[in-house]
Image (cartoon, rainbow, N blue to C red; front, top):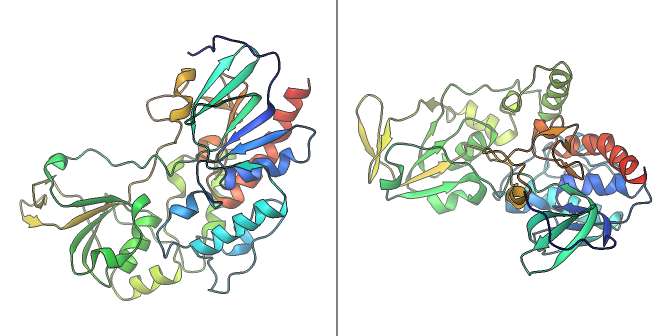
Length: 355
């Protein structure tokens, strides 16, 4: 655990929020209702959070009505039922402006350390800022996860995590494996199979939701199961049938195959022993919490998680975490979930600082 050598006589801010995406903005909305002074440090150079890094055709899994932050509903999408990535970015940008939320960017936080009664936030430019409390809302996008596979280091083709995928044009005419059975895998398979020779590789057959069920229903189910103590992060992984995915299913382009045995220099060996040359692999295998900036506190486990009780770090009560998945609140990594979680924990944080 890290303890700063000098203890400041006062803090620069009551609260520092690390991360200016949907979770950070939701927390800021409720902090505005208190007497606390706060600021957001955001590593991006523009608003929009993780949505700014998504692929060009990425769409939300819920209609605009159920994809809103607190206080101001997302406008209906002119592009159809499910808003696009660009519409989500525009909404978050205007939300930030509408509520005049104090965001400083680009500011990348290197570490959070202890200094007497305060926490010290150190940034990559060498500056230090103190706060009475810190809300970590950096999400998962900067910590893409690729599982270990035999021969992976030997493979000479292209490897790309979905975090860095942009357009199917980059893979036109190639032989591509899309690995991972969630919504990202389904959306990328749906569009890439139109221009490339693809195989969608999953550990089990994907579970498609009924056509009239969207991410809003998933959120409600996850919330109910968490309250009952039966929900895990893996329970909200069913595939939403947004129009491009539905079209791919109807055209027979969403068939899956099970995992291969290992990589070779130019491809893979399937479990029946067949060798196949592969040009590229796109990993749709999820993310881990982007909590490296908290490592110096000595409270981050091997998976990037921090032990919390109602979003408050158990071993560092001046630290709160939100937006990382169900372990930081029901569906806290979604637009609507981040707001509901913030409504719950921000008043508790404010009460703690006023006591």
